[in-house]
Every structure is written in C-alpha cells, then in structure tokens.
Image (cartoon, rainbow, N blue to C red):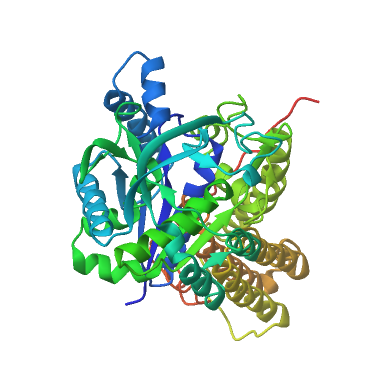
Length: 510
C-alpha cells in the first residue's frame, strides 16, 4: 500500500498556539485527509518541544519548575488541536521517556563512530533561537528573527562533525530536486552550503543549563535542543516498532516555516547520515504570516489565536482563509478585513448560496424527493459533469505541488460552473410549464450530484462543511469517499433535507 508520513515541527512551549502554529498544522491535516481520500495510508505526527534555555527561563518567570510549565503549555497545544478537529495520529513530547531513550541511543552511536568530539568554542549566541550565529547570518549585528544583538559565549562543549557530511548533503540535494521545496528554499540551502560548514555545538554545560536530555557519555552536559527535537521524527515512528518505522520513514514529509529551514535542511539530514539512517523524502517550507508590517509572534504582540477565530467565525471559515490566502512558500498578510471579505464572497455568497438555492428548489418543486434521470443528453448537462472531472484532475495536480490555493480555486471553478448551469437551464422558469417539469427534475438531479461531488472534493479542506452538505443530501459520509465519480448516488425516490445556512454573512460596521 502507498504511504505518506506527515510531520509538523514540534512547537516550542514558550508560547501558546497562534496563527503560525495553526497554519502548519492545518496544512498537515489537509494533506492527511487528502491522501486518505486517495486511498493512501497517511500518518500525521505533531507535538511539543520542551527543553532548552527559553523553557527554563519561561518557567522561572512563571515561578514554577520547567517540567510543570511544559506540562501546562503542551496540554494547551494538544487540547487546541483537538478542539480544531486536527486528525493527528500521535502527539509527541520531547520529555516523553521513549523519545529521551532514542535521542541518547543516536547520540551514543554517533559518538562511538567518532563524529562527536569535545572542544572549546566562542561565538555569538541568540538565547531566543538557542543557537550560535555567524557574522554573515546577522543583520546589522542582530538576530534576524528576534532583532536583538546576540551574546558572545565562550565555553567547552561537545561538537558534531557536521562538516564531514557537507558534500554528501550537497550531492543529495542536487540529485533530488524535490528534496527541499519550493525551489527558492532548495537554492537557499545550496547557497549556504557553498561556504565551509562549521561543526555543530550539540551540548550545553549543566553549569549554565540543566533543563535538557543528559548526554549519555557525559552527565555534566545536556543535549542541544535542536539535536534533541529533530529526532522526534524518528522516535515518534519507532514507538510503534521497527516495522512501522521502515514502512513510513521512506515517505517522510516535513512541513515547516522558513525560519527553521537551516536546522531541517542542514542539521537534520547530516545527523541522519551520521546515524546511518535514510534521509527524509521531502522538506516542505512555507512563508510567514505578516500582520502590521511584521512577522506574527508573541513577542511582537500581534497574535491571532485559533480558538478565538473558531469561536467567532467557525473553524472551516478560518481553515479556508489560511489555505486560500497563502501561496505555499511565500509570505501572506493576515487582516480581519481581508478575512471577512473572502469569507463573505467565497463561502457565504458563492458556496453557501448555491447549496441553499439547490436544496430550496428541490423542496419547493418536489418536496425534497429526487426525480429520475431521463434519456436527455443536453449539452449543458455534459458541460457541468466535465467541469467537475476537470476540477478533480486539477486538484490532484495542485495538491502534489502543495498549491492549496490553486486546489481551492479549482473547486470554486466547478462551483462557478454549477451557478452558470442554473442560469443556463433556468429550472425556476421551466417549472411554470407543467410539461417541462420532468426536465426540471433532471436538472435538479444534476445539481444535487454537483453538490455531492463538491462535498467530496472539499472534504480535506473544509471537513465540517463537507459533512454538513452530505447530511443535507441525506447520503452516507462514505459515499464515493475516494473518487467522487459522477452519477449513481441518488436513486429516484431518495429524499434530501431542507437547507440550513452554511456560512452566515459576516456583517461589518459601515
């Protein structure tokens, strides 16, 4: 059976879930649902990253122990994704005992192979990013993410011979064009690798930081947070056994934001090489959500929280905006004005009105009872069917490239074709002539079929909406779940239900 392994990053527990976390998680959930609809066995991993300087500092500021602080924030992440309907298969925490064991086992293997050594290093260190920066990486002497000058630190630590694997990584990236995508991020990693790759400091002395996984070969040091967190992608599968790991790991697809490109595009593959493990299949990198001319973050005070959006507008409306507004790989702007405009136009006025209009006509003209199809082969009927066949083909192409916005455009193209079909056929006019009412029954039959296929195509993106449409149509949620093939789902006499407003129009102050 074909498989895919999807991962979000482990979200750092120094902040509660916001828009940036939600976008990555929603696209992972959408991909999982899409692949399942295509008959692919999909496994989705998410979780929380809980060690390091920032967590120890946040715990101190909250007057508690790091573990208790991490327990609280991790539980918030998990309950948020549950409330948002995210269909993850496993939620991993870097404080989980099985993860700690895998990290220490991999560290031991790399150490015994001679790829970890003890040395002294001095460099500029950003406590916010928990890593050293080179002068070239700084912008006007400041961390590019936190806009603060890093601190110079000189101390003895353990180092991973990352430079040993530089050429091997370059060769792999060049021979596998889809290894890092979109292309701009592949080029960015290759540009970075044109310079000699420094070895990676993978420890922190306990004299400075105690909150971390102890090195298995030196109890006076803890593991660098990235060398710990990245291994979750392996430990989260190995928890299910080696056979499960071997089945899914070859199809590992990581989903990350561009701020963690370097750890995932350079640290992680070289770590895998040193550990003797196969590389992941793809690293998929998206851009930032921008608000008020800056990246959205807790420190900047411009956070959009998923549960607040769900409570106010509905989760599917929020999902739609995220998937439709951002071009994967590029930055996108979030504003309530653009959100309301798109939801009113695309969901309330277009999709919602179409569903209500079709079901209302079915109730008004035939008391909800589906009429039989005759021998009519009208050109407009064929054109409607072809619009959905085309939409399904386009959807498959766009999803392969992670073009979520184009995939939704394809579905909405079919929705537009359905609205045009109503205008072309004019059932509300034909029904006034009794002899033409059988044709009205046929037209509405085709329109109900259009709604059914729309629901099937929408299900990975707007799962609650898709289920509501199927409920209105009074059909099983499993009907044509894999391939929304046109026709054959509405036998004569089948009764559909009265419509309920899918997306109430959002009123704004004048």
